[in-house]
Picture 1 (cartoon, rainbow, N blue to C red):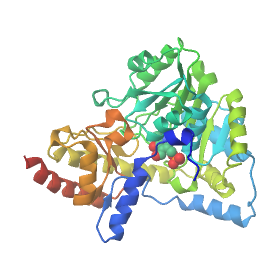
Picture 2 (cartoon, rainbow, N blue to C red; picture 1 turned 90 degrees about the horizontal axis):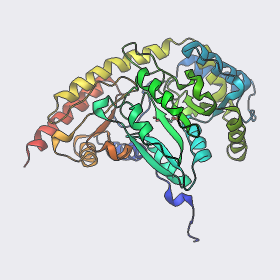
Picture 3 (cartoon, helix red, strand yellow; picture 1 turned 135 degrees about the vertical axis):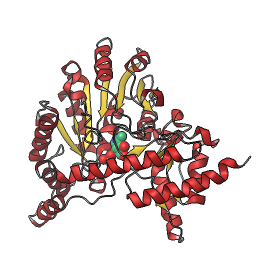
Picture 4 (tube, helix red, strand yellow; picture 1 turned 45 degrees about the horizontal axis):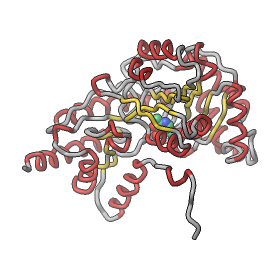
Length: 394
Ligand code: PLP
Protein backbone atom coordinates (compact mmCIF):
# COMPACT_ATOMS: atom_id res chain seq x y z
CA UNK A 1 0.00 0.00 0.00
CA UNK A 2 1.51 3.41 -0.90
CA UNK A 3 2.40 5.59 2.11
CA UNK A 4 0.50 8.85 2.50
CA UNK A 5 2.86 11.80 2.24
CA UNK A 6 0.77 14.87 2.77
CA UNK A 7 -0.83 17.30 5.12
CA UNK A 8 -3.08 14.42 6.18
CA UNK A 9 -0.24 13.18 8.38
CA UNK A 10 -0.55 16.37 10.44
CA UNK A 11 -4.31 16.41 10.93
CA UNK A 12 -5.79 15.99 14.43
CA UNK A 13 -9.34 15.36 15.57
CA UNK A 14 -11.98 15.95 18.18
CA UNK A 15 -11.66 13.65 21.18
CA UNK A 16 -15.29 14.29 22.15
CA UNK A 17 -16.27 11.85 19.40
CA UNK A 18 -13.86 9.20 20.75
CA UNK A 19 -15.34 9.63 24.25
CA UNK A 20 -18.84 9.32 22.79
CA UNK A 21 -17.81 6.09 21.01
CA UNK A 22 -16.32 4.66 24.24
CA UNK A 23 -19.39 5.68 26.27
CA UNK A 24 -21.65 4.04 23.67
CA UNK A 25 -19.48 0.90 23.79
CA UNK A 26 -19.73 0.69 27.57
CA UNK A 27 -23.50 1.25 27.43
CA UNK A 28 -23.78 -1.56 24.88
CA UNK A 29 -21.96 -3.83 27.33
CA UNK A 30 -24.72 -3.06 29.83
CA UNK A 31 -22.98 -0.29 31.80
CA UNK A 32 -25.09 2.65 32.90
CA UNK A 33 -23.32 5.78 31.60
CA UNK A 34 -24.36 9.40 32.11
CA UNK A 35 -22.99 11.27 29.13
CA UNK A 36 -21.84 14.79 29.89
CA UNK A 37 -19.25 14.56 27.14
CA UNK A 38 -20.90 15.47 23.90
CA UNK A 39 -21.59 19.05 22.85
CA UNK A 40 -25.03 18.83 21.39
CA UNK A 41 -28.41 19.92 22.79
CA UNK A 42 -30.45 17.02 24.18
CA UNK A 43 -33.60 18.55 22.68
CA UNK A 44 -35.38 17.54 19.50
CA UNK A 45 -35.41 20.00 16.62
CA UNK A 46 -38.67 22.01 16.97
CA UNK A 47 -41.52 20.34 15.00
CA UNK A 48 -42.24 23.27 12.66
CA UNK A 49 -38.62 23.07 11.44
CA UNK A 50 -38.88 19.31 10.86
CA UNK A 51 -42.16 19.84 8.98
CA UNK A 52 -40.54 22.40 6.68
CA UNK A 53 -37.93 19.83 5.65
CA UNK A 54 -40.56 17.13 5.10
CA UNK A 55 -42.61 19.54 3.01
CA UNK A 56 -39.53 20.48 0.95
CA UNK A 57 -38.95 16.83 0.14
CA UNK A 58 -42.64 16.26 -0.67
CA UNK A 59 -42.62 19.38 -2.87
CA UNK A 60 -39.79 17.96 -4.93
CA UNK A 61 -36.77 19.92 -3.71
CA UNK A 62 -34.47 17.03 -4.55
CA UNK A 63 -31.81 18.62 -6.73
CA UNK A 64 -28.67 20.68 -6.29
CA UNK A 65 -29.15 24.16 -4.90
CA UNK A 66 -26.91 27.11 -5.81
CA UNK A 67 -23.39 26.45 -4.42
CA UNK A 68 -23.63 29.28 -1.90
CA UNK A 69 -27.14 28.40 -0.74
CA UNK A 70 -30.78 29.17 -1.52
CA UNK A 71 -31.33 32.90 -1.91
CA UNK A 72 -34.35 32.96 0.48
CA UNK A 73 -32.18 31.35 3.15
CA UNK A 74 -29.33 33.81 2.61
CA UNK A 75 -31.88 36.62 2.84
CA UNK A 76 -33.33 35.11 6.01
CA UNK A 77 -29.84 35.00 7.57
CA UNK A 78 -29.26 38.68 6.72
CA UNK A 79 -32.67 39.60 8.18
CA UNK A 80 -32.01 37.56 11.32
CA UNK A 81 -28.63 39.26 11.90
CA UNK A 82 -30.32 42.62 11.51
CA UNK A 83 -33.14 41.71 13.89
CA UNK A 84 -30.90 40.23 16.58
CA UNK A 85 -27.78 42.33 16.30
CA UNK A 86 -28.83 45.45 14.40
CA UNK A 87 -26.14 44.86 11.77
CA UNK A 88 -26.58 45.27 8.03
CA UNK A 89 -25.33 42.33 5.98
CA UNK A 90 -25.93 41.80 2.27
CA UNK A 91 -27.31 38.32 1.47
CA UNK A 92 -24.61 38.25 -1.22
CA UNK A 93 -22.00 37.90 1.51
CA UNK A 94 -23.77 35.00 3.24
CA UNK A 95 -22.53 31.53 2.34
CA UNK A 96 -24.59 28.51 3.40
CA UNK A 97 -22.48 25.46 4.25
CA UNK A 98 -23.01 22.00 5.81
CA UNK A 99 -22.43 22.94 9.48
CA UNK A 100 -20.54 25.53 11.47
CA UNK A 101 -17.26 23.68 11.06
CA UNK A 102 -17.11 24.22 7.31
CA UNK A 103 -16.60 28.00 7.54
CA UNK A 104 -13.71 27.37 9.96
CA UNK A 105 -12.23 24.80 7.57
CA UNK A 106 -12.41 27.19 4.62
CA UNK A 107 -11.12 30.26 6.48
CA UNK A 108 -8.12 28.42 7.94
CA UNK A 109 -7.31 26.88 4.52
CA UNK A 110 -7.53 30.32 2.95
CA UNK A 111 -4.98 31.95 5.27
CA UNK A 112 -2.86 29.05 6.52
CA UNK A 113 0.46 28.18 4.84
CA UNK A 114 4.02 27.39 5.91
CA UNK A 115 5.68 30.54 7.31
CA UNK A 116 2.39 31.97 8.56
CA UNK A 117 1.18 32.28 12.18
CA UNK A 118 -2.46 31.77 13.15
CA UNK A 119 -3.69 32.74 16.64
CA UNK A 120 -6.40 30.61 18.23
CA UNK A 121 -7.93 30.28 21.72
CA UNK A 122 -6.48 27.65 24.09
CA UNK A 123 -8.36 25.93 25.63
CA UNK A 124 -10.53 26.08 22.53
CA UNK A 125 -12.40 24.04 19.94
CA UNK A 126 -9.79 21.41 18.92
CA UNK A 127 -10.40 21.72 15.20
CA UNK A 128 -8.82 25.19 15.11
CA UNK A 129 -5.38 23.83 15.93
CA UNK A 130 -5.82 20.69 13.89
CA UNK A 131 -6.72 22.66 10.76
CA UNK A 132 -3.93 25.20 11.33
CA UNK A 133 -1.41 22.35 11.45
CA UNK A 134 -3.00 20.78 8.39
CA UNK A 135 -2.17 23.91 6.38
CA UNK A 136 1.44 23.97 7.60
CA UNK A 137 0.94 27.28 9.44
CA UNK A 138 2.26 27.76 12.98
CA UNK A 139 -0.46 27.53 15.64
CA UNK A 140 -0.06 30.26 18.27
CA UNK A 141 -2.28 29.63 21.31
CA UNK A 142 -3.98 32.59 22.97
CA UNK A 143 -4.42 31.49 26.61
CA UNK A 144 -7.97 31.61 27.96
CA UNK A 145 -7.47 32.11 31.69
CA UNK A 146 -9.81 31.13 34.52
CA UNK A 147 -8.79 34.28 36.41
CA UNK A 148 -10.05 36.28 33.43
CA UNK A 149 -13.40 34.43 33.27
CA UNK A 150 -12.01 32.42 30.30
CA UNK A 151 -12.38 35.55 28.16
CA UNK A 152 -9.97 36.96 25.59
CA UNK A 153 -7.60 39.58 26.99
CA UNK A 154 -7.16 42.26 24.31
CA UNK A 155 -3.69 43.10 25.59
CA UNK A 156 -2.43 39.52 25.68
CA UNK A 157 -3.96 38.71 22.26
CA UNK A 158 -2.52 41.80 20.57
CA UNK A 159 0.86 41.08 22.18
CA UNK A 160 1.04 37.72 20.38
CA UNK A 161 0.63 39.24 16.89
CA UNK A 162 3.84 39.23 14.81
CA UNK A 163 4.59 40.21 11.19
CA UNK A 164 3.89 36.54 10.33
CA UNK A 165 0.33 36.60 11.75
CA UNK A 166 -2.36 36.25 9.07
CA UNK A 167 -5.43 35.11 11.00
CA UNK A 168 -6.84 35.58 14.49
CA UNK A 169 -9.56 33.16 15.59
CA UNK A 170 -12.00 34.41 18.23
CA UNK A 171 -14.75 32.42 19.95
CA UNK A 172 -17.26 33.93 22.36
CA UNK A 173 -19.36 32.47 23.95
CA UNK A 174 -16.74 29.76 24.07
CA UNK A 175 -16.37 26.04 23.88
CA UNK A 176 -15.10 24.40 26.14
CA UNK A 177 -15.19 27.00 28.93
CA UNK A 178 -18.56 28.77 28.62
CA UNK A 179 -16.55 32.01 28.81
CA UNK A 180 -17.95 35.20 27.30
CA UNK A 181 -15.60 38.04 26.33
CA UNK A 182 -17.01 41.38 27.55
CA UNK A 183 -17.75 44.20 25.11
CA UNK A 184 -15.06 46.43 26.64
CA UNK A 185 -12.40 43.82 25.84
CA UNK A 186 -13.68 43.32 22.27
CA UNK A 187 -13.68 47.13 21.80
CA UNK A 188 -10.04 47.23 22.91
CA UNK A 189 -9.09 44.28 20.72
CA UNK A 190 -10.68 45.77 17.61
CA UNK A 191 -9.08 49.16 18.31
CA UNK A 192 -5.68 47.45 18.65
CA UNK A 193 -6.16 45.58 15.36
CA UNK A 194 -5.87 48.97 13.64
CA UNK A 195 -2.12 48.54 13.98
CA UNK A 196 -2.23 45.19 12.18
CA UNK A 197 -4.21 45.67 8.96
CA UNK A 198 -2.82 42.46 7.43
CA UNK A 199 -4.47 40.26 10.10
CA UNK A 200 -7.80 38.65 9.13
CA UNK A 201 -10.32 37.72 11.85
CA UNK A 202 -12.48 34.60 12.09
CA UNK A 203 -15.16 35.09 14.73
CA UNK A 204 -16.82 31.82 15.72
CA UNK A 205 -20.20 32.88 17.12
CA UNK A 206 -21.96 29.51 16.98
CA UNK A 207 -23.04 29.99 20.63
CA UNK A 208 -24.05 33.63 20.08
CA UNK A 209 -27.64 33.09 21.20
CA UNK A 210 -26.58 31.10 24.24
CA UNK A 211 -25.80 33.68 26.92
CA UNK A 212 -27.30 33.97 30.40
CA UNK A 213 -28.34 36.58 32.96
CA UNK A 214 -29.50 38.95 30.22
CA UNK A 215 -25.93 39.32 28.95
CA UNK A 216 -26.04 40.62 25.35
CA UNK A 217 -23.92 38.86 22.74
CA UNK A 218 -21.45 41.20 21.08
CA UNK A 219 -20.99 40.24 17.42
CA UNK A 220 -17.77 41.27 15.68
CA UNK A 221 -19.96 42.26 12.72
CA UNK A 222 -20.86 45.42 14.63
CA UNK A 223 -17.34 46.86 14.18
CA UNK A 224 -17.14 48.66 10.78
CA UNK A 225 -13.35 49.04 11.17
CA UNK A 226 -12.78 45.31 10.57
CA UNK A 227 -15.74 44.39 8.36
CA UNK A 228 -13.51 44.11 5.27
CA UNK A 229 -11.34 41.47 6.98
CA UNK A 230 -13.84 39.65 9.16
CA UNK A 231 -15.31 36.20 8.57
CA UNK A 232 -18.28 35.38 10.80
CA UNK A 233 -19.05 31.73 11.58
CA UNK A 234 -22.52 30.78 12.76
CA UNK A 235 -25.12 28.09 12.20
CA UNK A 236 -28.19 26.24 13.34
CA UNK A 237 -26.64 23.28 15.19
CA UNK A 238 -26.71 24.62 18.74
CA UNK A 239 -29.42 27.31 18.68
CA UNK A 240 -32.09 25.11 17.09
CA UNK A 241 -30.84 21.69 18.23
CA UNK A 242 -29.95 20.78 14.64
CA UNK A 243 -26.48 19.18 14.90
CA UNK A 244 -27.40 16.29 12.60
CA UNK A 245 -28.90 18.45 9.87
CA UNK A 246 -25.48 19.86 8.94
CA UNK A 247 -26.37 23.48 8.36
CA UNK A 248 -24.23 26.53 9.00
CA UNK A 249 -23.22 29.81 7.41
CA UNK A 250 -20.37 32.23 7.01
CA UNK A 251 -20.49 35.98 6.36
CA UNK A 252 -17.50 36.85 4.18
CA UNK A 253 -15.99 40.00 2.66
CA UNK A 254 -16.79 39.84 -1.05
CA UNK A 255 -13.29 39.04 -2.48
CA UNK A 256 -12.89 36.10 -0.08
CA UNK A 257 -16.48 34.99 -0.63
CA UNK A 258 -15.74 34.33 -4.30
CA UNK A 259 -12.67 32.26 -3.45
CA UNK A 260 -14.58 30.26 -0.84
CA UNK A 261 -17.37 29.66 -3.38
CA UNK A 262 -14.87 27.95 -5.67
CA UNK A 263 -13.84 25.62 -2.84
CA UNK A 264 -17.53 24.72 -2.40
CA UNK A 265 -17.82 23.91 -6.11
CA UNK A 266 -14.67 21.79 -5.88
CA UNK A 267 -15.80 19.82 -2.85
CA UNK A 268 -19.40 19.39 -1.67
CA UNK A 269 -21.20 21.36 -4.46
CA UNK A 270 -23.95 22.65 -2.16
CA UNK A 271 -25.67 22.08 1.18
CA UNK A 272 -28.52 19.58 1.56
CA UNK A 273 -31.64 21.17 0.04
CA UNK A 274 -34.18 19.99 2.64
CA UNK A 275 -31.93 21.21 5.48
CA UNK A 276 -31.84 24.64 3.88
CA UNK A 277 -35.65 24.83 3.75
CA UNK A 278 -35.68 23.80 7.40
CA UNK A 279 -33.18 26.58 8.09
CA UNK A 280 -35.58 29.17 6.66
CA UNK A 281 -38.38 27.90 8.93
CA UNK A 282 -36.02 28.08 11.91
CA UNK A 283 -35.11 31.72 11.33
CA UNK A 284 -38.53 32.96 10.26
CA UNK A 285 -40.73 30.89 12.57
CA UNK A 286 -41.50 31.26 16.29
CA UNK A 287 -38.44 31.46 18.55
CA UNK A 288 -40.09 30.18 21.74
CA UNK A 289 -38.39 26.78 21.47
CA UNK A 290 -35.01 28.55 21.66
CA UNK A 291 -36.13 30.39 24.80
CA UNK A 292 -37.47 27.18 26.39
CA UNK A 293 -34.20 25.37 25.72
CA UNK A 294 -32.16 28.24 27.15
CA UNK A 295 -34.31 28.34 30.30
CA UNK A 296 -33.59 24.62 30.81
CA UNK A 297 -29.85 25.13 30.23
CA UNK A 298 -29.86 28.02 32.69
CA UNK A 299 -31.37 25.88 35.45
CA UNK A 300 -28.88 23.08 34.76
CA UNK A 301 -26.00 25.56 34.63
CA UNK A 302 -26.64 26.48 38.24
CA UNK A 303 -27.24 22.87 39.33
CA UNK A 304 -24.05 21.66 37.67
CA UNK A 305 -21.78 24.39 39.03
CA UNK A 306 -23.23 24.19 42.56
CA UNK A 307 -22.77 20.39 42.49
CA UNK A 308 -19.24 20.58 41.10
CA UNK A 309 -18.24 23.08 43.78
CA UNK A 310 -19.31 20.58 46.45
CA UNK A 311 -16.93 17.90 45.10
CA UNK A 312 -13.60 17.48 46.91
CA UNK A 313 -10.77 19.29 45.11
CA UNK A 314 -13.05 20.83 42.47
CA UNK A 315 -13.74 24.52 41.85
CA UNK A 316 -16.09 25.78 39.14
CA UNK A 317 -16.99 29.27 37.96
CA UNK A 318 -20.56 29.78 36.76
CA UNK A 319 -20.34 29.88 32.94
CA UNK A 320 -21.81 32.93 31.20
CA UNK A 321 -22.57 31.23 27.89
CA UNK A 322 -22.88 28.02 25.83
CA UNK A 323 -23.74 24.80 27.73
CA UNK A 324 -20.42 23.78 29.22
CA UNK A 325 -18.93 23.92 32.70
CA UNK A 326 -15.13 23.88 32.91
CA UNK A 327 -14.17 23.16 36.52
CA UNK A 328 -10.64 23.37 37.88
CA UNK A 329 -9.73 19.93 39.24
CA UNK A 330 -6.14 20.56 40.35
CA UNK A 331 -7.19 20.14 43.99
CA UNK A 332 -8.01 16.46 43.34
CA UNK A 333 -4.38 15.62 42.59
CA UNK A 334 -5.44 13.96 39.34
CA UNK A 335 -4.19 14.82 35.85
CA UNK A 336 -7.22 15.88 33.82
CA UNK A 337 -7.23 13.20 31.13
CA UNK A 338 -6.58 10.42 33.64
CA UNK A 339 -9.47 11.66 35.75
CA UNK A 340 -11.81 11.91 32.75
CA UNK A 341 -10.94 8.35 31.80
CA UNK A 342 -11.35 7.04 35.37
CA UNK A 343 -14.70 8.80 35.74
CA UNK A 344 -15.93 7.09 32.58
CA UNK A 345 -14.55 3.62 33.25
CA UNK A 346 -15.10 3.47 37.02
CA UNK A 347 -17.89 5.92 37.83
CA UNK A 348 -19.93 5.77 34.60
CA UNK A 349 -19.73 9.51 33.88
CA UNK A 350 -18.52 10.73 30.49
CA UNK A 351 -16.77 14.10 30.32
CA UNK A 352 -13.80 15.47 28.39
CA UNK A 353 -10.30 16.16 29.75
CA UNK A 354 -9.24 19.80 29.41
CA UNK A 355 -6.03 18.94 27.50
CA UNK A 356 -8.20 17.74 24.61
CA UNK A 357 -8.86 21.46 24.07
CA UNK A 358 -5.21 22.53 24.25
CA UNK A 359 -2.20 22.73 26.57
CA UNK A 360 -3.84 25.37 28.73
CA UNK A 361 -6.69 22.94 29.41
CA UNK A 362 -4.57 20.87 31.83
CA UNK A 363 -6.15 20.95 35.29
CA UNK A 364 -9.71 21.19 33.96
CA UNK A 365 -12.56 18.96 32.79
CA UNK A 366 -15.36 19.89 30.43
CA UNK A 367 -18.90 18.91 31.35
CA UNK A 368 -21.65 19.47 28.82
CA UNK A 369 -24.92 20.09 30.64
CA UNK A 370 -26.93 19.13 27.59
CA UNK A 371 -28.46 16.34 29.66
CA UNK A 372 -31.47 16.18 32.00
CA UNK A 373 -31.37 17.54 35.56
CA UNK A 374 -31.95 14.07 37.06
CA UNK A 375 -29.04 12.68 35.02
CA UNK A 376 -26.85 15.60 36.07
CA UNK A 377 -27.68 14.87 39.72
CA UNK A 378 -26.81 11.17 39.24
CA UNK A 379 -23.49 12.13 37.60
CA UNK A 380 -22.63 14.52 40.45
CA UNK A 381 -23.47 11.89 43.03
CA UNK A 382 -21.30 9.27 41.29
CA UNK A 383 -18.39 11.69 40.93
CA UNK A 384 -18.69 12.68 44.58
CA UNK A 385 -18.46 9.05 45.65
CA UNK A 386 -15.55 8.38 43.31
CA UNK A 387 -13.57 11.44 44.37
CA UNK A 388 -14.20 10.95 48.09
CA UNK A 389 -12.70 7.45 47.71
CA UNK A 390 -9.78 8.29 45.46
CA UNK A 391 -8.76 11.74 46.71
CA UNK A 392 -8.21 10.24 50.17
CA UNK A 393 -5.89 7.60 48.70
CA UNK A 394 -2.19 8.36 49.36
N1 PLP B 1 -17.52 26.06 16.71
C1 PLP B 1 -17.55 25.68 18.00
C2 PLP B 1 -16.91 26.55 19.01
C3 PLP B 1 -18.17 24.48 18.36
O1 PLP B 1 -18.19 24.11 19.64
C4 PLP B 1 -18.75 23.68 17.35
C5 PLP B 1 -19.37 22.37 17.68
O2 PLP B 1 -19.22 21.81 18.71
C6 PLP B 1 -18.68 24.11 16.03
C7 PLP B 1 -18.06 25.31 15.76
C8 PLP B 1 -19.20 23.28 14.91
O3 PLP B 1 -20.56 23.27 14.77
P1 PLP B 1 -21.28 22.32 13.71
O4 PLP B 1 -21.69 21.09 14.42
O5 PLP B 1 -22.41 23.14 13.20
O6 PLP B 1 -20.28 22.00 12.62
